[in-house]
Length: 168
Image (cartoon, rainbow, N blue to C red):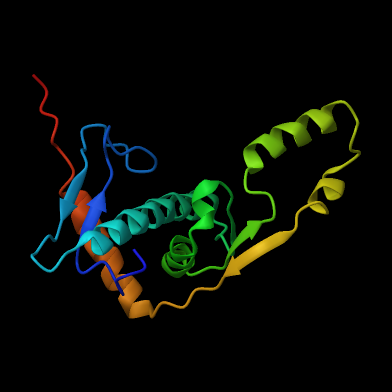
């Protein structure tokens, strides 16, 4: 993915068993659009990473709409956060800073924190918040017009994933 400057017009929608939150289209299936003889493995790899960011944006957009409170930064964790290209693209499409903590797996840590709070090992959430330390951060850098165009292309690709499962 780092061998190319962009996706070359290729978009991948990984709807392998449908599209769920926030679209709710179980009949959708994965599609790859925009293929030309110019597209190489770098473009495909980049399109896969970008799809992850676009799908994350859809969930964040839904959260913003439902809560009325816009996300002003996103804290991320998990294995994919090791990919700096993905994290920068995520900051770009969300237009908010993205931050990764020192520990990469917050789900397990969160369960431990919840258990510790329940038994009184930690007295309050502030104690736990003090344990969070940023390892890396990405600031949005994408031109707003490019973001708008790329988002419109992503939407067109998603539209093409619909209605592949025909009820019998």
